[in-house]
Image 1 (tube, rainbow, N blue to C red):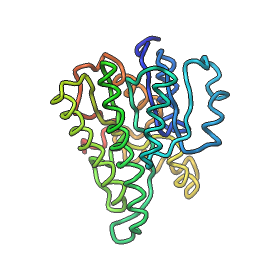
Image 2: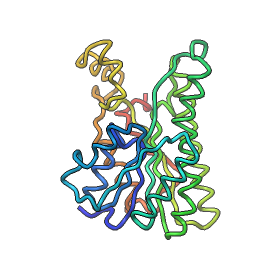
Image 3: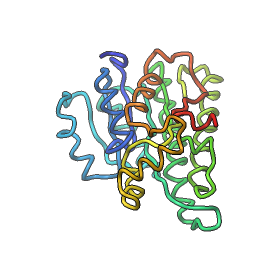
Image 4: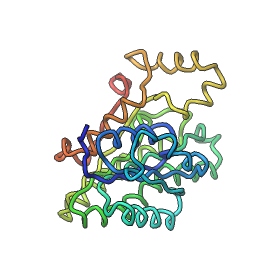
Length: 256
């Protein structure tokens, strides 16, 4: 239970879904964690939700990932509370939009602000701090939709594909500069998190999950542990030679 002992992590979108699962996993394995989210009500309930951990092991920050000043405040707060930054998990994301013709331009911009611009800002401001502290690992949550396109997910496909290639550029930049800072992306397929709630409301929970599972060769969707264990691996020194690449968690979807 000490795979990331002594490390300090920032996790965005930490109030729910993959972000919250990642926070729990890293805390269980010994990291100190700054949990950020724009949802003030839920982020304020973190102490109760994480009551099994010492309150010296985690802190919270209300944070808008699309706002540059908010990123600067988050980075500064993390250093002030924990003294350093070793891990950044860019987990905040939204799934909106439709096909290219039907997608409103404001929705297109919003999806890219949350899913892609936020990753740019996080990397931009975390890298100098990580390199100053000796080492770091940036883990950007993309999607299988960043690799495999859908006819009706234009903005989501574009934003998540951008995360994949941006992660590679960041990795090469850090290597070129001689920084011991790695950057990789994760690409899960359907995972049972609140992002599936609209589909569950439309079809019913069981039918929605079954509908998605039928698209996966393994005939099931993922759960949050599938992703949080991959995050843990990338955050730990076990992956110290891994940078500029991706982990695909899709039950075989991209192999078809």
